[in-house]
Image (cartoon, rainbow, N blue to C red; front, side, top):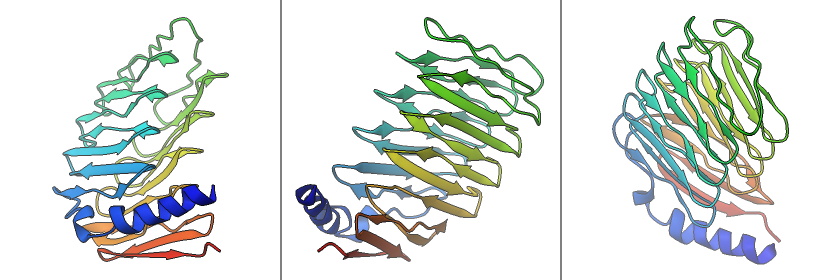
Length: 236
């Protein structure tokens, strides 16, 4: 572990944040590319109507395409593959190969049709302002509460735990224990706060909008403000 942390520290200081070119320019149409070797590689491209594409090799790969009325397509190889198509009155179709395949058709007062071959069944209770609670023992547990301004909280134990709170201007908070924990707060001009326990800590300030997070990695802490990254270590 000491060797891994030392290599990680060295990689972060030299490879990931050695130059400002690794930090993207502009959330509203540019790229945010923190390069975190061995652990996490993220690419966010145009949040407000374009693409959000975090690439997390070995752990999690997500692709979000056009949140505001287009497609949301997280791709999580080896663990979970989801495809959400048109949240506001269209289709939500998460495809979870090897584990779970779901098809949600028409959120806003229409039909909910989960198709879960070979594995399990779901129980959904009241979409429009109530709770959607599929209980997937051993594989996946989801809780969706009010998509249009409330909470979307999928809990995926052992694999992925996400919490989405108010997509249109509130909070988006995916919590991914053991692998990656993100906190996105107010996409449309507010805060973006990625929290990545066990791996690293990032603090971004004033990159078009504000992105802030503080955490430590077994004594290793990272801080980056206004396109500046200071790598400090409290390791012995």
